[in-house]
Image (cartoon, rainbow, N blue to C red; front, side, top):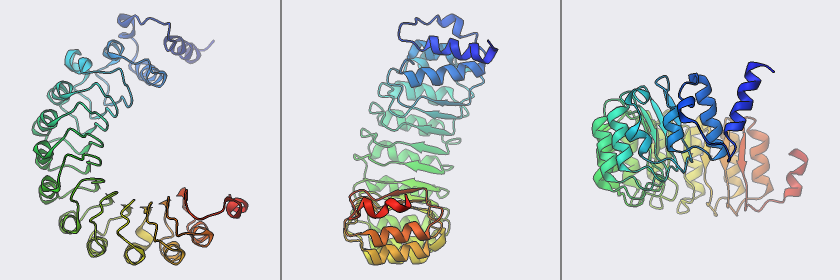
Length: 341
């Protein structure tokens, strides 16, 4: 049996529920095998604090622990700092036991950190985020905080200190208001990807401020922002010349005229569009979109109940680069589309 095959066999054995990890032996594995084992254990739901501490290695620059539900603050508080110091990217999405204590340790130890994702980390509060922003303001480029419902304006305003930010996602941070967001948009002008979905109070005034200050903006998500206005979105499409992705799902106060103006202004620049829940959209508007935006790769029309086969077929025939099309709950018969699927 070859060495790679033996390695895979060993990893498969280690992932079995009955296997008891000899942490000291794991520590001496080559870094490449540590990465493979970590990914396998994560997939098998067997990654926990003791094993993660044994697998951490000074050579790691990226660490993805998404959905590692057994991971707590312990690895970040007790690991050798040398094993964390070179991390540049850290993903802790849905690590529900990671709290402010772990985040403070991460901020103190990960000197090169520029990308961190904390979506679904429900124990993270203002204390942890504020410390992270104050400590790593010079290096942070991307922060994702989707669904961190315990965050308030107190810590979100500290994001304005991170003037090098390029990506910021605050979707679902429902205890935050627009006041600190206005400060961020005014002070951090290099943002290229911004997600404000579900933030209370996001309105035409917020969008106008974005248009004025974020001239490099490429992607904007405003899902469930019911106070977005036609005029502000038209202004956004005129001023943000790099814009190619718009998420406007369930902004059902907007209408066919809004989308006609957006597609006219963005035209072939538009690559991804989400207008799920726009029940008043009609086939004429979607046919025009298909003709103007032929570089679309993703289109979400979920619950656009005013659409029929005519609009959907126009998209399919005119957008050859399309990779994702969501037409659930549209007025479309599967039998009509079957010949082209």
